[in-house]
Image (cartoon, rainbow, N blue to C red; front, side):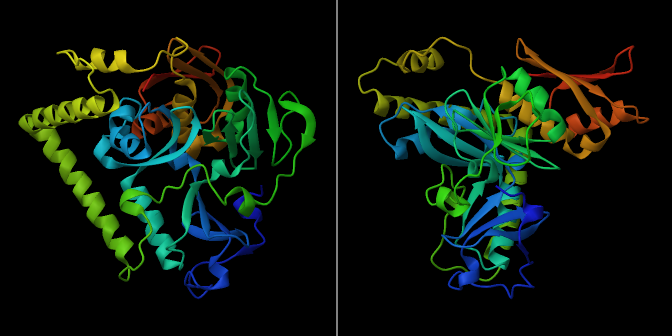
Length: 377
């Protein structure tokens, strides 16, 4: 899978004459990089690969009867797994990757609206939108598929999820994840990571994306048969302003928070009654619903990859100034030891974490290294 900077044809919407979806140029796989759409492979339905760094990919248990009920329950199932207010993000339900376990994409409304505006301007308003890590083949359970390039590394895990991180963090992340068997679909991996020392050549992108595991074009952003000029640009402003107003009101008005909480409790009781007719839902709703869920393996939830993804995204702008020495994960705390000698680097790292709302601390050790300790989100 070639990175976007190696694609054989690049053109902005204006240079391409802003083709509409009926023209052959609108077909094929496109990548979104630096605010521009770049053709990666011609042929097949129009598909836009968006940066996985801006999409949170989760594997969520939804033990409900059908997809409609899963969509209703989804906000309640993931609100404790994300740092953003649930009203500020777009949720997309993907494929069932295991029995009653689904792939879910989480992306901020303003980001999604910006992507929609770019697609509309380029005449790709009907294109699917897929996180680019999902363009990699899904490996076997417990393994990784990796596309390593000069500026980023994409990983798709055996559970169907994926993430993207700076290349300097790839090997430490692999070690912290238990050294899973890794297959390379890009530049050769470090020798320690290669299972058989070879780089694989997957089938065409367009073939793998005929039925993507996750298409972000759902709900508010679903395809429309007809659209007014620049509707997605205006919609982006409406969504962003609406989300901001909602957050301000919710923060200032405790009465409204109580009303929302009561409404969510009522909705949860209704969904639980649908999923398990006749169940006795007592006063402790959380315990009652937990008792209805199927018994799992007893293993704690995997918080390592979501936490690592948030930290790596925050450190992305500083990747040229740091070198990851080691990554450790214990008791829901992620520790990264970095090498970096630039003046003020500790302050810049701390500011980057705060800007991305990652809870944690940054200290410089006596040996000159920098230690980041990030806590469970």
